[in-house]
Image 1 (spheres, helix red, strand yellow):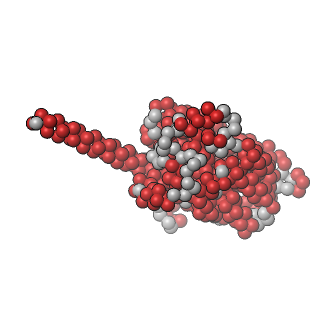
Image 2 (spheres, rainbow, N blue to C red):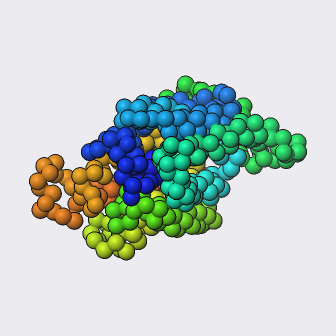
Image 3 (cartoon, rainbow, N blue to C red):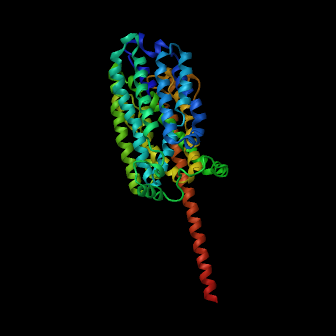
Length: 438
């Protein structure tokens, strides 16, 4: 998120802007965003098994500390090549954080309770987006202090809290319900029992090869992964380019940073509200599709409108991407049992989905600004014939494809349940017929 803010920070003072200092011309910024996701995707799935081996507190704490240290070191970068190197190692450091937290919550909460808890966690992304906008606005006034540019202060001041809170997590975060020190023995027994026999727990093997094969060979595994890929493609685009989109509405300096705050606050409210209602009603698919419809509408508005107010409203809608993601993840984690299957269902699925982080940055090439027209044609001269129609159409297609995949998933589940019900009724009828004839 802070790289997106850094791109527009002090853009009213070009000499001190990161784009000029690191020569991020052309698609270089997009490449810097994408290179982070290469190691991030590669180490995502193994990270969940490492968390089970070392314990959640140690592993998640380690991720936070290493991420914070590398973020601070980003302030020392002085050229494009150095930025690529630091982004690569940042991807290694941060890999596994999101699936690790999702899996960690599966140890503590039943499937019917997870959407709200996941939304509170994911809501932190919206809070971070809002806070980073406020923080970046204040940091812009530090430009030139201690011979550091504003973007260097941004990386330093956002990295320090991650290190400090990482230490707190390492030392004090409880690992499992069965060994939580803040619970009594009776409460620990109840906390484990309430999860049921299929929930992941401390006693599970770190890795079960048989279960891993069954999970990976299940066609539904890949259907979920495909669906989630399209969701995250949208999410990553917004995370890294919302400050740029807002800046291109005609704002600069701290004003552009401050205008990133309201959409993220709105997104936080929608994300948590949708997830809470999903848990309350015990329904997932409709809530995920409702979120996708909202986000898809936002991208369409961004594609078609030229008025800055209408485009800013579209940014509010796009900020709600996690409103679709959280019910979806709650549904996904409810379809698996045990630590190995849960680790794969979260780790591998999220790893595959984050391949979207490699492709998403190139949906916003600098040459397409301020409208960022992105169509299906590859010849640049052809864009002049289609000034608005193709803006972000790939993102809209992502949402539509994901909706189709999700509906197909529900239809298959309904069909399987219906077949089982009909077979059961047929068997009952046969038994009654045989009994009557006797």
